[in-house]
Length: 348
Image (cartoon, helix red, strand yellow):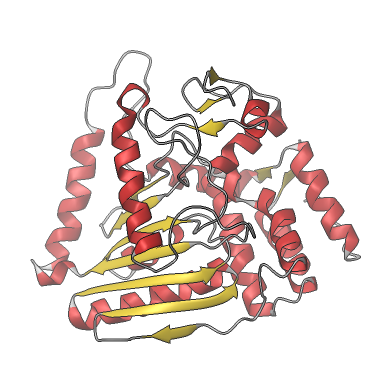
């Protein structure tokens, strides 16, 4: 399994994206998000996505350099149309807009449509947290093919419909939750398959509606289960609401478009703590609350209790120091794509 430095990996991804027609700036943005996902330990949203991004650009589903249009703008709201640009580029612009509005008006909400895959959802609410604000993001994949069954069902009718909430605090590590409303993100199934590992129990059903731990069953007509196991009605309910926020409220609709074009719809909400209390007090109390939770005596077999976001921060420190491990199948796929453009991948 190759171990590659973040800088080497970033240079490679940037070069490949530039070769597809992305500007230097846009390629660097997408690469930063991809490598950031690997650093955080979310390899499902890291460089394994590069071959798919290249394929979507070649077929015209992603449009490098697409204009980003802002419609129906008010002091606190806006609709952003990404015109099929890279989701990381479009979503950064949308969150920057929401942050600017919240700094002036204490609250902002922005919807986003017609953008390619956004990558790791946490990246955008964390922008708000770094600005001293509370950031939230809800996301779905528009009318692309569905992966998740409603609770009690056996046919996929929903996306993984992730959400993220990030908080400002005085801690060194960020405080946030970033989660799919399904038992797992769909890209994680691919990761387990590439590594030849069985899935945890409760993640998928096969095409006959039976529980399975075989990643191949997912690709043979199976589906993801909603978050929650026996209490999956909770994850299903969350998923339903996320789809309303990001499919119906945005105007993308629901169901499946036969074209199969991926179309991440998003709702971003940003709140200023200053609207409710002195922001320095809020930041300090979030940190104190996190430390209070961490001081919980651990259960048998558990080393320590972590607060939300702490594990990703620890992963990043370790991988920046030691490099990023890439499974052989992913590295082979990335190497093939790079070689197609005359780019020679290197380890280091």
